[in-house]
Length: 301
Image (cartoon, rainbow, N blue to C red):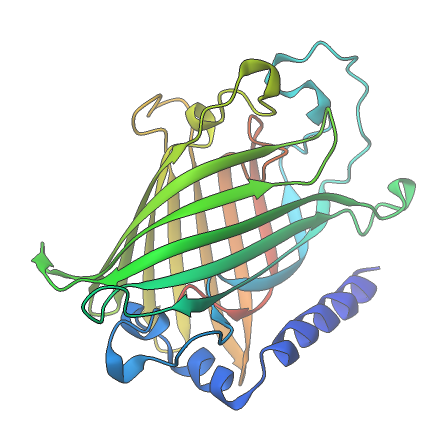
């Protein structure tokens, strides 16, 4: 069973990597290990427009264990629906792919670029024969961003970028499993040696109570995140902390750690540990710990 999932996961990785396998893409994918290179924040680093480039990590985790699978997602948000439990396995497969492309550049005085990004992640009950190996949850996230280069010093870090964008994230489900939210997301990027720090606050567009698929999501998932990335030789370690810094800093939020290291030229082993609320949209109000092991092709940088 695990071998089947591994083969399918490998084919998925191969498809995505071949889709992005042009010479220009290869150069960008292999050499963009700084914010300035990843976001083309200097004339010498620009690759023009409409070139597919990396965004968030791309990985496949054939084995992801959960301490508490959400077997009653239809009862989220205070629903009074019957508490029939979904017979989920504690181990499933998770994968994510993400890319972006620049659609306009040099908006004002030859600076400021517009990027369009897309990220998709899925949780797959591939070992669960009783559920017909169903995809339990998929999250779809298109966004558009305006990105500017920065150059200042603070606490030993050098400013790299400033961005603001519109973000939509949803799971494409129907009631009572539908989840979605729309946000304005800001981003400040800083670098210091092998360390990169991303500060990403967001504001959710309000919805009427009767239309809100996920009430209280900012108090549980958070209204911002901090991502710290450390690169050392072939190892990349990242820590992602989400918190309701404004609404409920001590009751919600999550922390996720990722560690990847090269095992073959373009292939990395990948370990992911998560604890808290909102591992995915369906589970926005469900607290759990997950541990996943697999492979990755791309990191944050």
